[in-house]
Amino acid sequence: MKNRYEIDMCSGTILPKLLRFAFPLMLSSILQLLFNAADVVVVGRFAGDTALAAVGSNTNLISLLTNLFMGCSVGSNILAARFYGAQEHERLHRTVHTSMLLSVIGGLVLSVIGCLGAKTILVWMNCPDNILDLAALYLRIYFLGMPATMLYNFGAALLRAAGDTQRPMYYLTLAGVVNVLLNLYFVIVLEMSVAGVATATVISQYISAALVVRCMTRNSGAIHLDLKALRFHKGYLKQILQVGLPAGLQGVLFSVSNVLIQSSVNTFGDVVMAGNAAAVNIEHFIYVSMNAFYQANMTFVSQNYGAGRFERIRPIILRALGCVMVVGVGLGNLTVLFGRPLLGIYSTSADVIAAGMNRLSIVCAFYALCGMMDCMMGALRGLGYITLPMLVSLFGACGLRLLWLATIFQIPSLHSIRTLYWSYPISWLITFAAQTCFCIWAMKRLKRHLETGTPLHTF
Image 1 (cartoon, helix red, strand yellow):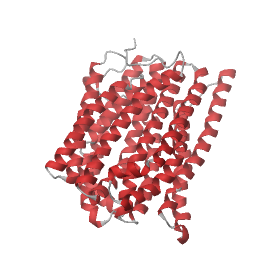
Image 2 (tube, rainbow, N blue to C red):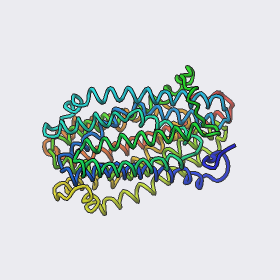
Image 3 (cartoon, rainbow, N blue to C red):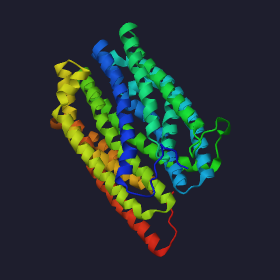
Image 4 (tube, rainbow, N blue to C red):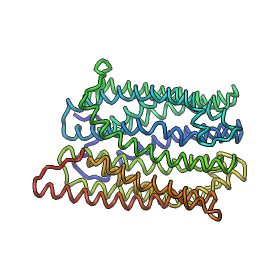
């Protein structure tokens, strides 16, 4: 029996259900970004551009340190969706409990790494001396919330496997409101600067994690969590890692290239760093809007694959890709058009706004390419091709960016911040083309399997 939050992905019309899945996920991600943006706005307005640069300089580093374990949540989602579609309830039960225990352990590991290695890693990233201590303080406090962050993300990924994207949105909304209120109190009233912002974030993370765990323990449906049953089921842990680690490694590789780009951005000084930080925060709203359809595509494909509804897979991919194109092109170009007033929310400095526009005018204008690249990658993951998307990203987006930094960016006449930003759309375009070719190959392989009855092994 499906509860009212779950979606039947394996029958009926596709687009309305795809939108029903994606919109709450999109809205919850946007709300989360709004609450995170409140961190940056409060710091920029009430603690100054130095504090703003300190918070912004941590964005890519946090992604680098968390993406490996976040990738494992992708593995949990794909496996849970496949078992859910196939109605294999015992295997789904073991996947849920193995995943949630893995999230706690992963969060604790990240807390230790983030707290002990914060300053050293920031030094490696060429973080300027005048913001180093503030950036390290923010990072140490932020990583105290990692166990909660992992719990929430794994729990939400498992709920999404059954089509439930609504309740995680409600939990994020409540936690986000608390985050904003605490931001204002800690920064304006107590004058805690970046420490106040980080502390507010950690408290809100534990609230959202507690709500997700409460939801899953009270869930009488397929995604039920029994805290006494938490344990590693060997075969299932292996499968989650087999699926999730390549996805996580891919995220790490993207973050490595972004960290290296951030290191190059840091060499242009505080003003460019602050403008870059503000622009990145704006871009994230477009990215998560497109990413909702990547998540939908991956989950729908995986469920239908598990249920043996292979004829629905191609229409799912095409509809998800179309949604991504509409969202990416529309929001990307609107962002460029209204870039200056949007950047003005983060800083009143004309120089910081100009620096932010340098990034928005290049990255956002072509952001649809990033969403389309992810959408094709989601289709491959839903079909069970895990290593392949990772390798394409390794040699496509990440390798090309590193090559760009080592060659084009080093040419004296091209050594500028705009040249640096052009590495993004160029790498997206090439990687999208490669992912599309492999997805066409995977669908032809699936068709041959259906025609001949030969075994089809993915993961």
